[in-house]
Length: 295
Image (cartoon, rainbow, N blue to C red; front, side, top):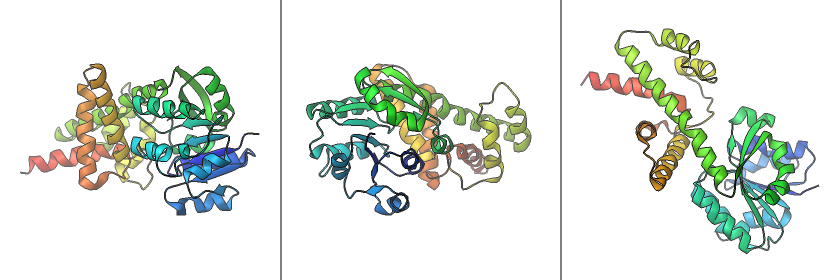
């Protein structure tokens, strides 16, 4: 049985990593904030002091980190994953990265004799806990097969998008309409509110119309009543939308709609809402327009 290493115990990683203990895999974990690793250590995982220690102990190393900079630091920094002998090991990078970052990390792994796939996921905390994510994989067939046993612990489906970097590209493609949807919903609600419609009435009708996503009915209570539950926070949405816009610019693809959404997420983040669920921009945009009307 493969020995698993796991880096990143944030919202997603905290529910993903324990699945390896439940499945009987030897598990070593690392998190930048060590206190977040205490619970899984008590559950049976070995807690490492550095990414390098994880790499030394594992056959397959999974990382799901905040952003490109965090991933680069984990791989390339002092006491990083690649600071030790990793010949023959397999890396599975599940963070939402820019495609060029994934390709650069893969090249550095190849120099050290290690395999690499980028495998960001579609899904939030609840499916992550249940092992029902969808992995979007970029990498060779050989590396995917080496990664598959670990990926199957976490996912309901594995999509092989192509060579390294294509998993990251597919994740950006999937995130774009989601980010735009909350922006468009916010605009629709703002328009209706300006015309005298009640928020609850609008959301109830929207949820039963062709303009709804599957997740909208689940988000309505959060919009109406507020909640501490966060599936996908505004700061992360801003980060991902920025990557989408910049990748569009790189390929010469106009991105007017996601650019407008990015401006809203950035404004909400600047207003102190970065840790709130992304759907909170519905209230943010409505409140902002109301404040502007009163000036």
